[in-house]
Image 1 (tube, helix red, strand yellow):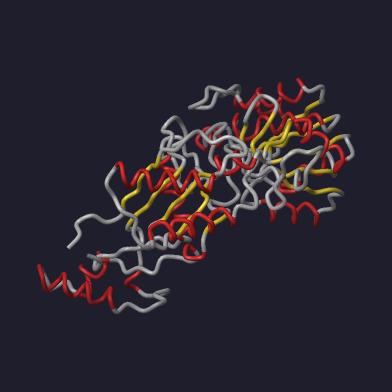
Image 2 (tube, helix red, strand yellow):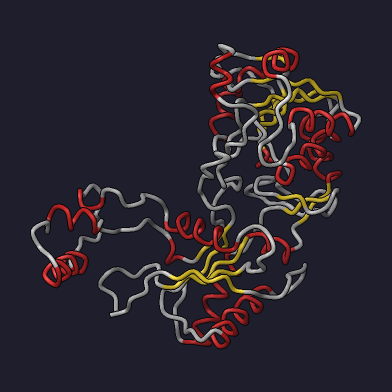
Length: 396
């Protein structure tokens, strides 16, 4: 029997630039790695490509000026409320500069004690000590400073309150900062709102509209079409973007279904193997020390081949060993569990034998694995090959 299960490999390739034939680069890189590192592709292997190089090859970039112009056109160029941004130099600060270029004044409403993905301004123990209820209390900047003072982020060393304030003022825009976790709190200051939350954005928009807001847009509504030749994303707008230079952002990739289908087709022609292919961004895992969720992209996988649709349909071996076959050992136990796997139902939802298995989409699980494998620094492996992911205990 085979003694190795799932293998995740980072695949090196050339540095991707705008206009490069990414489809060919990915196929060539995987096939070359197989030859140099002595492995063969198998059916149901997964080739994953990070969203960053997809967007870069597409040239899907936009300037701060383009963001500012779209903001001004959609909000009128006066006072806007910018609510629930994440605390990130890479993800949000450059977008905030664009927002400031499109407005005369920004009411910046920050969630506290942390943002949507877990970046903290302070901790709950401090809130408790000051008898502040983050679910109901709305604080001005002066009240916040009097209660909590200045607090720098554990990992970045940045006081994001001061940092964001200075960014806005640096663009010639007035700023007022408040702290609240209820979206409707912003309506006491302005009826024009840009909500910057990611995964709760639909509900936030609904609550604001029901409460009488005049204009409510999310970051997914900005740069949904080109502004003066800029890049854009019709589905996600500014969501999933990253800082590229001091004046430009790289947007989330668009129109890449043809890329993943094409890579699948080319691998089949070259090897006779039917692989699955996906584009991946942030995974979905939490740092236990900093409490930060790696989940700032709107979806983990915006594009993938059809074989990756769905959720795992797996039995929990630990449950079978401790319950159904608790009196068996050795070969008898192995055979009993193998038979259970071979004859398991096509849909195990609700079965006790599945408890403890991870109830997530296959693309989300694979995206987390790939994100951890590729890293976010200088590994130089924007392509990940996952082998054996769909195997189980019975596969030789």
